[in-house]
Length: 280
Length: 209
Image (cartoon, rainbow over all chains, first blue to last red; front, side, top):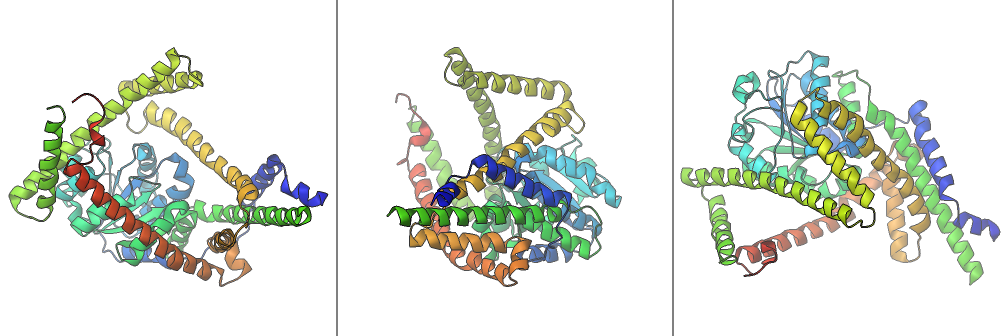
C-alpha cells in the first residue's frame, strides 16, 4: 500500500532528472534506432525531386526560435535538396521572429553547393499583412517586396527576372509553427493561383493538416522532428548531401522521452487504481 | 456618423471584394491589387498601434506598482534597446540586432522556454493522465499508439506500430478534424456576413455614437 502511495507522489524533481538524463544520453551516444521515410515526407521529396533544373521553389519561414530544433532541419534539408538538384530558392516569411532564422539558412547553406546569392537564392524578408502579402505576391512579387532583405532592388537580382509572380513558381514549402502559416498559403496561393503547397509543421499541429493532405491540397507534409529526420535521410540516401543530420540525431532522444512519459503514465495509473481499490 | 460611415465602408468593400473574386476583368484585377496594397498599409499602422499599446500598458503598470511591475521594466528596457539598436545599426546580417539580440538572446531564451515543456509535460502526464472512464482509457491507448508509432523505438518494439499510428491519424483523427474544419468554415462565413451586413459591430470598439 505504502509503495503504491509512494508511486502516486513521485517528486517532480526526480521526474525532471530522469527525463533530462534520458534526453541527453542519446545526443552524446546515439542509439542508432534508424529512421524510415513515410509516405507524406516522400510525397514532398518526390515533388521537389521531379522539378527540372533551373526552376524556383518558394520557402516560407513561418516559425520562431522556440520551434527551431523541430523545424530548422526541414528548412536546411529542403534547401540542400533544391541546390543539389540545381533548383533556385526564394525565401520569405510571415513571422517577423523567423527573419533571423531564414537569414542564417541563406548565409550558411548555399555556399556548401557553390550557389550565389541573387543568382540561385534570394531572401525577400518579412512584410506585415499576411494574406495581403500572399495575394500581392500572386499578382506581382515586386509590388510587395520592391527590395530583398538586404535592400537590393529585385530588378538587380538575376534570379528575380524569371520570377515575377507566384504562378512562376511550381511549388511552395511553408514551414509553420502556428498561425499565420501553411493554411494561408493553401487558402490564397494554392486555391487562387494553383500553386502546389507542401508543409513542414510542428508535431503538435501536424494532425490538423491531415484533411488537406487527403484532399490533395497539400503536396506532402513533414510532421515534427520525425518529418525533418525523414527528409534528411532521403536527401542523404540520394547522395545530395553529407551534412550532419540534427533531426536524425534528435530522434533517439525523442524516442526515449516518449517512452519515459508512457512509463510514468502507466506507473501513475497502476498506483491510482491500486490505492483506489484498497481505499474502497 | 461615427458608426454609420465605418459600417457603410465595411458593407461596400465586403460586397465589392466578394464580387471581385469571380470577375477576372482587368478593372477588377486592378481594384484587387489596389486593395491588397491598402491592407498592407493598414497592417503597418496596426504594428505602430500595437507597439504604442504595449508601451502604454507597461508604463501604467509601472506607475501604479501593480503585481509583477518589475517585469514591465524588463519589457520596456528590452523594447527600447531593440528599437535603438535596430534604428542605429540596421537589421541586416551581421548587425548587432541580428548577432546580439536575435542569435545570442532571443534564440537561446526562446529555445530554453520551449525545451522546459518536455519536463512539465512528463510531470503533468504522470499526475493527470488517468484512465478513470472508458473515454479516458480510449484516449490513453490512442495516445500511446501514436506516441510510440511516431518515433523509431516504436518500430523496434513492433514493426506494425507505425502503421497502426498512421491509421489512428488518418481515419479517426481525420474524421474529427474534418468535422471541426467544416464547423469553423461555416462559422467564419456566418461571422463575415454578420460583419459585412452590420449585425456584428464588436470590431467598431466602444465609445459614443
